[in-house]
Each structure stands twice: as structure tokens, then as C-alpha cells.
Image (cartoon, rainbow, N blue to C red; front, side):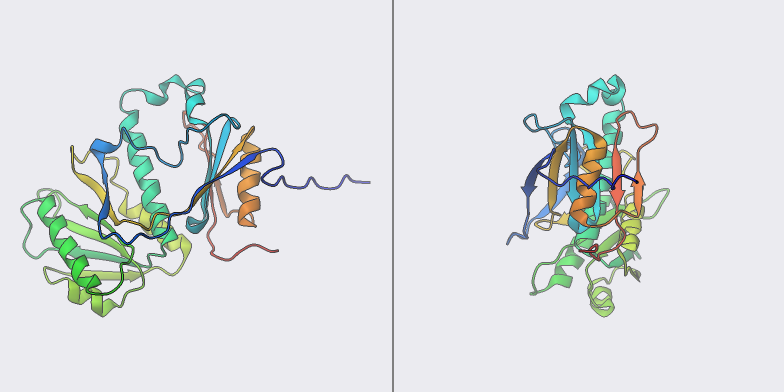
Length: 276
């Protein structure tokens, strides 16, 4: 007689669950900006440092439909001393920024992918960013705040300056009327997978140095995705906790083969809850 299947472990059995925080939108009109000059002091949610509670950290972003399992921050050097070798810091900072953009776009259901161009080339990236920001203020008008993502691309020399925006379900007419300095292209993203792919596309150049004080991206502040963490003794246990919390198996699991630090990433491509 076959043995019964092993029951998945729930938070509280072996791992120690920790709800990090739920961040609700704030009544604050300021914008959050990712600056390369700040990257050394900022910790991404993938690199927690907490009291001893297990060798692995499993983090779930339920709104973004993804999760990660990574070794505790203080133990990463044991896997590969090259983890902080020269040049890796910049690459890691770019990867963290790409992850933040992806989670922000999916969690806030940014279903409009907008590209705006300039008929008259701006003198600098800063001038282009300021023009796009004025357009966003016009788009908001006197209405409630909404989440948005803005990325400036091009250098004005080898590539014309332009901007990529990811916006919630605003009307095409309102978006077009808010921009008068060039062309507007609007695409609709209807699924989690489409939003994730577009967020990865617009952040594709984050590994290029942008210069001290310049912005890789900018988002409306106060709409950061919720993060929930567990600590586990083994990575497989961390994966079990994430799947149990989401209620279904992920469509994609990436194990980071060849990466100097062991990492597992899970993606769910649907907003629908699992059975039960």
C-alpha cells in the first residue's frame, strides 16, 4: 500500500512566519525616486537582515504574484566570496531596481503602456523628465492620486529622448490630451503576464550606468506592494510556504543556475486564487 502524500508545511509548523508590513497609499503627493547614488544604502526586500530564525528567507509579494527564496543576507558570503566583487554591486543594484519596477507594475494593475516622444528634442534627460512630469500632473488634474511608473530613455545623441509610462486604466483620450509635445502610443495590457513582460521591457537598460544623481525610474509614492516573509531551514521549505500561501502552484519557477548566490524565484500568471 502506497504511503500517503506528504502534507505541505504551513507557516508555524517548522518555519517562522513574519509579516513584514502592508503599505497602504499615503496622502502624500511626493514621488519616490530610485537614485543610483542611494543604491549602496538601500536594502531590497530580497535581502533581509533579521534576528536568527532560519538560514533562508522566503518573501511573497501577493499583489505582484511572485515570490523569492534566498539565503539570509549575512550568510551569502559563505556561498561565493565573489558575490560582492568589483562591478557586481552595480549589477545587483540594477537587478533590484528591475524587480521593484516589475512588482510595482503588476501589484498596481498598471494596464496602460504609454510611449511619448518629443517633436523638438529636449536639451537634456532632466528637461525631458520635467516635461513628462507636467503631463502627469495634468492627467491627474483635481482627481485622486493614482499609481504610475515613468522611465526616460535615450541620450539625445545616438538615440532620441523618449519616455515610457505604465498607467492604470485611464481613458486613451485623457492620456493623449495630457501630452502635446509629440506622439503618443498606447497599448493595453490585460493580464498579469503582459504587465510583467512590459515592466521587464521598460527596465531592460537599467544595467547601463545612468550617472550620479540621475534616476533609473520614478513612481508615484505610496503604492508599494505588500511583502510577507517567512524564514526556513531549507530552500524547499521556503518554496512550500510560498505555494501554500498563494493557494496554487506557480506557472514558472526559476532556480538561478550559474548565479553566485542560490536563489529561487516563483511567478504566478493569474490573479485567480487557488482551490479551497
